[in-house]
Image 1 (cartoon, rainbow, N blue to C red):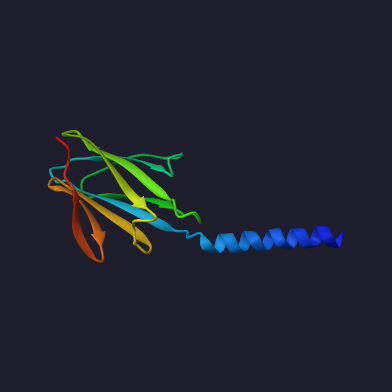
Image 2 (image 1 turned 180 degrees about the vertical axis):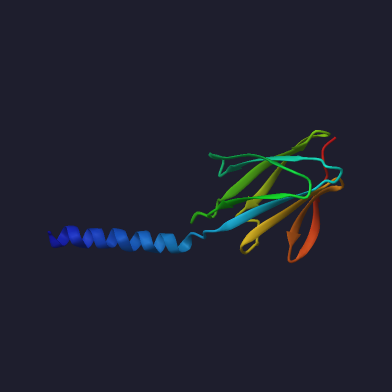
Length: 131
């Protein structure tokens, strides 16, 4: 094989490895349904505005997680809609790379009193359900 071609292939391989090292894999966004009274929670998420992650119906007391990887441009987002039979659709950003500091996973808890996110080991109120 031509040494110039081999050098170019090695450079491409090296760049691929370096870029891959900056991408973080294995992030999880957990959605936990603690609405009570047997109420189901529907959550539908889109990854980076282009990949439909699907809709999940989460039974009361149950949870679901979405797995994704950040990109090197620091623009990764997981945008979601949540709903119950009694409430209008709630739009929220479950993960925004430039905003969130969750190391391995981001936890969201849905209750009748609102939506909470886990920050530094403490549940913090995030938003109320729309009427």
